[in-house]
Image (tube, rainbow, N blue to C red):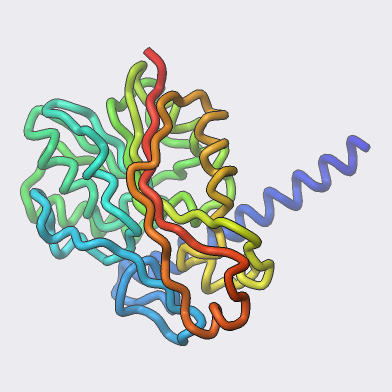
Length: 269
């Protein structure tokens, strides 16, 4: 029995690594100007069956930088994050720095913003954007958000936008978020979840995985991971149903739906 458990664990580890490598490769290409055939953003779909678009308009927000907006989000977590002057904010899966620059407008010069991303090309792009803008209180770190390269109790606020759905170990990530938050700190995350009977054929679609859809899990399970990590006051601030392509709707009917949600929670004092 023990050997079977070890084998299953090793298989799971290999699968998780394969998914991460796939996501890293795809988003490295995006940083260099390529597009995803299926995506969180707009204008980057190949076939109708791979086209899911859901990004929100950031252009009206203070701190918005067009060069950092790759249209890969599924919400605007900073809208509900309650970021204050002087806060330290960590952005998970920071990409080219879009949410970090918006968060910096809230923290001001006295605050600090840390972006973590596992894609070297994205880190380089974000650093170049920050350098061009002359910002000294933003740091971009290459790292895995399942094992964040920051110390315990580092942040007042953690944000993320359409990233956790790309990674397999969501439960582990929420425990990491809990670890890096200060007592009384909080997170606000925009992400993709599902309801109903999510088809295996979609879960196994590689392009849809890197495009934010196939890695999504059921909404109640997602919220359960948050509560299970120890967070209080778990609140869904915003929820939108993502319109499915016509051929997907015709094939599966109303057996499932895909939602973009913005959810927040608080670490106890």
